[in-house]
Image (cartoon, rainbow, N blue to C red; front, side):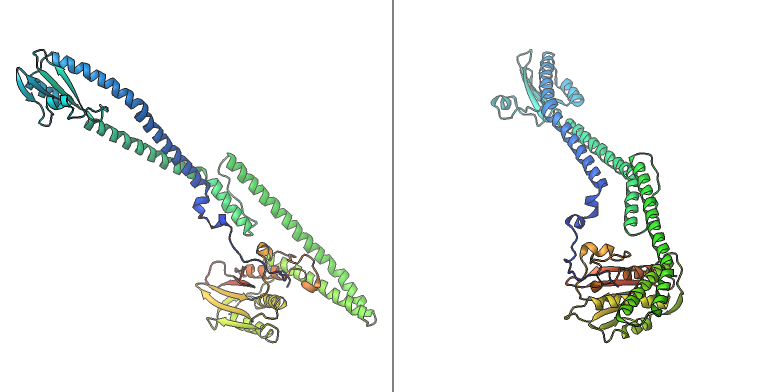
Length: 450
């Protein structure tokens, strides 16, 4: 087994962008934020336009209109009854002081003398406050008119703001669901990319639109089909070559048997044996890929694990089992599972350092899954290579020297065996050094269990 090398990789750390919450990196969230910012900017623009442009011009025009109207009212010399009736209709309060006496339509009206002395400030915002106008009457008296438009205008402003906010919220909600619906193809495409990167080569994304997203989905499906074809052609080529090599290897073995014994003959025989082993593993990969080659029987995992561990007791750095349960029954092919355990322990022993602690194997049960973790403190695997260690013929050591490993099929076979059992194998780097291989076996009744 040879998918590792002696390099000590850096500790695994997620990039800064990966540590951000997924929602903050979503295009959908960014579009909604832009839309909210545009709505808020439009609201501020409308408010500023009314406050700084429409408001001052409107106030000055209404102020001049009110002055003319109060002069006209004063010329008609209204009495108290007429003034009260008008005050009820248009919020215009009147105080009169003159030869005909003194009266007021509202108790809080200031006196004419207070207005003349400036004790009551005149307001510039006619529509938001009470404004006062002193007008001489035809009988020599003086009328004080007080326009109270503020309350009514405040109500209008409040209603306008509430209306604008309601419209803005409605636009945001409608846009939210519209964008969500429009971006559904992109979400499905992202899920398809995730499944493809996880190794599901049969993924097909539904084409629900005919826009740019639809064309992108169609291109993705075509790409997946081409990748499937390329991988199938590669696997078929390896399979064909493996089959064709068996006949000449058999003839070579016969010829070697007829040669006299000498070191050269022994070296050639070792090379032929290694080639036979490689071909056998390639054919085993193909059988596992097609779902053949397994003899499933319900049995206990623990005796199989102990038997394999016993063969490594005298091999440095040793093996230690930490089990939470004494027996775990699952539907497995015992010989294939032995191969997985043996490959992982051979790998750990091969790359162990003089100061390495014994390999630790922990066994536990989580719901309907048995989880076996094989942990060593060897040199570990570089972070950039973790995703590729289960690929056939992959080796971190590109030299492919016999001194640093074989030909890179051990972990690939482990992966295929675990997947054929409905389980999986994954790799985690330890914080300090070494690596942990996690095996998961579905127990009886679990989804995917054979």
